[in-house]
Length: 369
Image 1: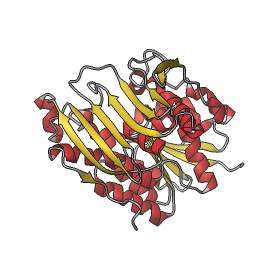
Image 2: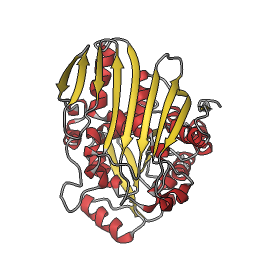
Image 3: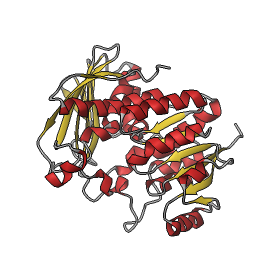
């Protein structure tokens, strides 16, 4: 495969991480970048040698030399930018979540089908080394029959950009929902969720969401397995933990309770600490180093996702490689638009359930024409 996919990047906070990855991928190149602040745009463009620079994301999307758009903008912009990219005939990758309401998720899925272009939600946990490790254990049969799944993402979001303040916990649940659904190889059918505790009123009024913690159980399509998800964003004391646990009939996996400690494999009643390997060998040689390092390597210039996210499990180059590979092979990337919508809608519907006092909420079928 000698063709290069020409990528345009929108949003250069966390998005800067992907510039050198695409530049060092054998089948990709960065042809354009977009940042609202002209001074920051110029500095980043000079640092990475990208000549085509935009302060207006709409102009980048209309650039005829851009094959694919990778969006790393604030959450409220994801849906509008993704729709515009697909409608302009561009392939689209977008950081999580896909959108913030069901109608927008449906619109993106329709635009993907109508345009014939590909969409991928860039869910980091689906390409983290821990996910690869457990997926291999399940596929090999070593874990036996899958019996139960649990996801937990607890993170204090104070100090993040203002639109985060008071965000309903389940509206940003893809990091703990996605691995459960992917490991079970299915989608969420319905959800029951309960809210617990209260956040400060100054936070709660922003989205009309009072809950400190939201905890949900997911009924999975065509499965006798139930998944459980817990999420908190504010006013809940806990070290950062973005995790999933997988319980099998022979072997179970539990994420470490404290960051930088080994995870546990339970062989019956015998627990064994395990060091998860890196999976850089799955990648083209030029981007392998980015499983363990990023742009933000100095103490003075480190992105919050690295302060509180351990580099997202080495996922960034795997995400970019999957997106580029899918476009070259003209196949749906993983996760596809429909999968991405279901993973995102699980959290949206869970919050709706919590507001209704734990009423069961069924997800729409995003594959419908």
